[in-house]
Amino acid sequence: MAIRTILVPVSGGVGGDSALDAALAIAGRSNAHIEALHVVPSQGDMVPILGEGASAALIEDLVTAAQRDAALRTQRAEAAFAAALAGGIVTRMDGPPASIEARLRHPTINWRLVEGREDEVVARRGRLFDLIVVPRPGGEGDVAPETTLEAALVESGRPVLVSPPVLGPTMATRVAIAWNGSTAAARAVAAARPFLAKAQSVVILEGDGAAADGATAEDLAAMLAWRGIAAGIHRFRSDGGGIGLSILDAANQAGADLVVMGGYGHSRLREMIFGGATIDAMFESNLPLLMTH
View (cartoon, rainbow, N blue to C red):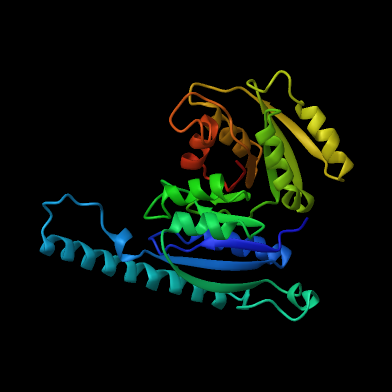
């Protein structure tokens, strides 16, 4: 199934435009529609919870500073949206066309401004889209909060593409699949089918921690062949840096410009949500990651 609708939160943070750039690249290849979503925090969400001793003057100062920051973020987000339109890849379309034939002629984009918490809005709104694109947390500059990524992965039920701070010259032309035979990896491969079908090359990365009772890389390659997708196999060893970083090293060695992965189980912070490899990859990847939970 082709990707026809993409949700991308545009937070207006410094250095957070890579997600919109990634969404534009995907839409340009598949004539998809992008919703650029900007969430303005409500006044109650602008300031931290204060103790009973907080003065009215302190609260007023905090609210004023938060409002100023929110206004600046909105200006940046609007500028990013205007730049996307000026780039010529997409045209603005604020509502569905009269016919699907007209819709599929070229990629389109709309702007949506919502008040609330970004993570909650993205989780709720994202359930309607084929793909959610978010910036990588922990990169250079001020990017979308980590909570938005967590909400997109855990609560939307949709595949999520995590964009690095700086995109390479190509994306999804050489796809690497991080495979360990798990259910999470299988779901990620299913979500990646639109990318795999259009990729110039596909390589399956299998580490030494692959599930003994799961399907092997050879099994996956054989099944992809039934879909007309030729996939090579690259095996790697996990070093002391963790399986997630080993996956990224293997993907870079293979020349990949997109990594497809599910969650890997490691005993560490938030394992119950993501798994160790997923956490490593989210915070360290220089490549776009297509992920499912």
